[in-house]
Image (cartoon, rainbow, N blue to C red; front, side, top):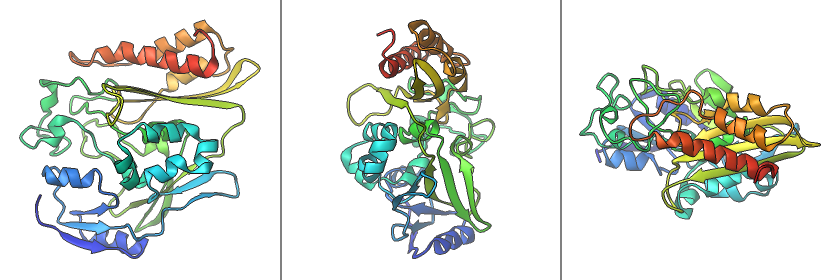
Length: 329
């Protein structure tokens, strides 16, 4: 780890000012990702701006019935909060399936949104990586890439986005709130993360000097059922090979609304719009669920080591839908 300066912020404007004045500065909250990357020389900030004192940890209900979660709320707090467990059990399931209890006690909602890939070639500076240095190449192309993405890939990068929480937020259609030198703005969750394209080093829609301050979850629709399914190599403290977040509004045997997202297979939390189209407005049946699961594989771009994810995804989607609906089990 290289030497760095350390500063604490007593207000959001303090933190924004520090980031504006120093492009090499990084925000630190729980530090569960950033400190690891600093030890590996992947992240080399010359200054850390500590935002742990900022009053951004509240979880509150708005007048419209949505729930606002401050960016400094710890993952454990969110997972066990009564409002989250009652109205958004999908989010609680996703959070509790990630990391360990100790890490969840430190990790924050804002930090989870900014979580970086676990690609071994990204985390080892001996290898070429376009995420670290744009244009340097991608060693994963000819290397071992069993855990890599099959959706949202490019010739520059096909590293997987690692977050469980973000897959749930995609399905819940969260709004990300940010503050920066030009004031506050709000962005639909599916626009926050950026697929690699030709600029894999640009991972989010945050502008220079901006800070994530909160996530807002819209008021849940009635008659909704949801599940978060995660398939991994071992039962605890492991990243997803495939995960599926599914939320269905079912009334009188018909699906009025469907939202589906995948983890472990996308370069960003992957919203499965095509699967949702198959399900929305349809009557629940075993054949419908099979059709939806088959649709999940559409557009996949597997490579030689991660081709198994295509069929694994199909089966995981089918299992999630079967459990939610009770059809075809």
